Image (cartoon, rainbow, N blue to C red):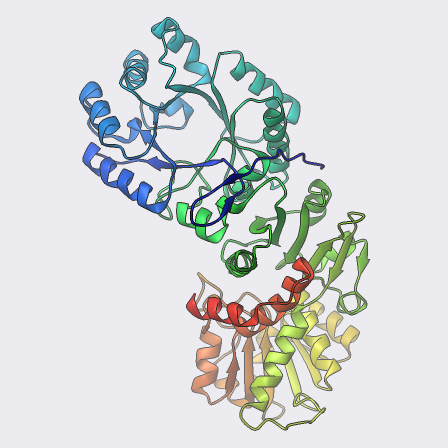
Amino acid sequence: MELVTPAVERMGGSEGITRNSTLICAPIMADTVDQMLVQMNLAKSSGADLVEIRLDSLKEFSPREDIQTLIKLSSLPTLFTYRPTWEGGQYNGDEQSRLDALRLAMELGADHIDVELQAVDDFKNLIHGDKPTKCKLIVSSHNYQNTPSVEDMGNLVAKIQSTGADIVKFATTALDITDVARVFQITAHSQVSGVPIIAMVMGERGLMSRVLCPKFGGYLTFGTLEHGRVSAPGQPTIRDLLDLFNFRQLGPDTKVYGIIGKPVGHSKSPMLYNHAFRSVGFNGVYVHLLVDDVKNFLETYSSTDFAGFSCTIPHKESVVQCCDEVDPIAKSIGAVNCIIRRQNDGKLYGCNTDYVGAISAIEDGLRGSDVQNGSTVSPLAGKLFVVIGAGGAGKALAYGAKEKGARIVIANRTYDRARELAEIIGGEALSLADLSTYHPEEGMILANTTSIGMQPNIEETPISKEALKSYALVFDAVYTPKITRLLREARECGAKIVTGVEMFIGQAYEQYERFTGLPAPKELFREIMEKH
């Protein structure tokens, strides 16, 4: 999908150029006005541009007195919303009183008020066209079921415009990440026709709509004060918008990168890449991409603005077929973890940086302090190397270890998949259930490439502690938590351990260089990972 991005650039404060004029709005939801005032001050110190005061969250409400207090004591511009239950809010009282309160907010000096499309005719009858010029009327529509077609959303925008709205707002629900592309299309089109628009796609699959609105020219995005305290599903925090996604530096020409996976919310990649982008002034942003169907995703976001992707579980193998060209090593592994969209022709190039990061980390772990300077022989040569998992990462590690002269054993929950990979690589196959009784020799290497033991299931481990005594070194590709139960027990048994962080950093160096054409800031990557 070719997406047109409108041009806008303005000078920001201490951070240099701010490439967009999109506002960050903090939803304020609390039981009392006093609690709201505390939150409003916090919103200002967090970097929000305005506050959305959700009157429907108040347990007790004296309209004139409370609205006056909130406007008078707010250090940020205000947006008043009084959302009824029929539009996903908490107010279930009399409609006349609700609209009266919004009219009062307008009269008392609110900067914006939000009135639902379904109620806007009644509201207009109430105010008889008498609206202060200072107050902008946002007319909104929320769809908690799905994201309609471009045609239907276009008609909805036209309908909202026809009510005399100063700003159009609509929110849909993402059933698939490709739904967001249609909303970007509407946003960009509205920008060209000069209508301020707020367009959000709710849910984790819609995160990109909230982060990238400056690229497509959205009027505002919502950022919460803390994780979990959201006024709609999928809202990021203000902190994440500003510090993780470099929101103020995003603009029409910003290239989009991201991690394609399912699950993907745990990934530390956005933190790593965005920090590095910011440190060198690279105009790119790296986002979490919760993808169900990778082929559909890549076909939908076909513009060269979507410039590169990291690929993780469960898409590393299926994505090979989606690439126009695949690096020979990735082809023989049968898994791709890095995709570059060539800027000259839009073609997709796939490669694999997984095995480089993991194998070199394991070699370094084996060498330890007794580094054989100048030795070209890998410390993996001749070792029995047991890989848990027969997916993309398992294939990559088995291939990499084989290249270094190791003897390979594949252990997998389903024995047939283990056997298939063992036949391709040239090695033995085991079912995972048999791994705990498998110890043909001492000094073996174990590499877990599955998500067993990853947050939140941190008490899970793929192998019994007793069996770990036969291993000289244990590696775990899971890096959340850094020390998994598997690694903790391996260390207790006297094995050397190599964490997933080492593999993660190793594969990230190469991806960063492919994404940007710049040398990887290795020290910075290490600092970031140690800090977090």
